[in-house]
Image (cartoon, rainbow, N blue to C red; front, top):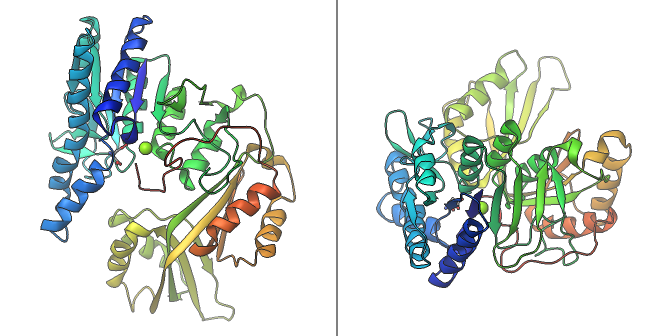
Length: 418
Ligand code: ASP
Ligand code: MG
């Protein structure tokens, strides 16, 4: 079994001991156990702040050296607590655990898990603690996997060990039909398909890192998201064929950390968009929604708008600076945008869902800036201050409420938070 504990689940000594007891209980039930831990509480944020105190643009390689320490602290402490419970535990850094990544510091991707050392420790009847969120490049540099990356470590380790399940222990009871902090009667979802979970993670549900869901889908890992404070059953993420019901809409997700950039005066010729997005890709900026308007008259100029996570906003603007005059004439920025999305496998075969979304937002007098769809998702970029109202209104309009338990503390973290 692979068990992953998030930052709030190991935030103080008491909670580390509680996680240790849960890990030991699993071992005593007869499972070999690998536990992947996140950094304690706000440790990662504090480490980032520390870096920013000494440098305005911290070197990414050194940033990874710094950030990887948070998870190591959690693992060493938890190993001590487990040893005191009469079991043998060993903590491993990401590199010791064989997590091999590419070289893109602070956003690295796992390319291989060489799990021999974990397997050997399990053979010796150890409980193995693996520091989440980190790995090592082929050049032996320490890397980190992006915010929330411990989820991906856990899934990757589970895949490599062919674990029965990857349990994600968190500070909420599971995955909800909306952020319970915004919607009091949000429903706990007993099951979600990979496809829905991918769309939800991509559109702001902070409960699982997007990449972890991708990895789980690609490797067939069963994810079980549950509370570290209770024994409630939680949410299982499974293949679509295994889901029991296909409701029209499963969840409303949101993000309040979008920024929109609009480029005016884009030449209407082949290669114009390619130039712009190549520059953004080069700067490692994650572009989300893109809208291009063709000029209304021949020989006119086009306009391209796109959104990026607000944290990538200044890097994106800087990356485009050099193209001004050549690829576009003017850049207009809106840093305070949000996004609301509805996700549901059932909408694939059901007309009228988009119309209902737009009518619901209209009734709230919320102006829609950009729209994008996938077969199972509709997203609207809206002003940040309208997000909370939009989420409640859509949740009510699609009748998503139901019995369910509301978690304690930060139920869904905004994108970027642990
Ligand atoms: N500690 C890292 C973060 O805050 C990774 C994680 O918690 O998953 O993003
Ligand atoms: Mg997390």
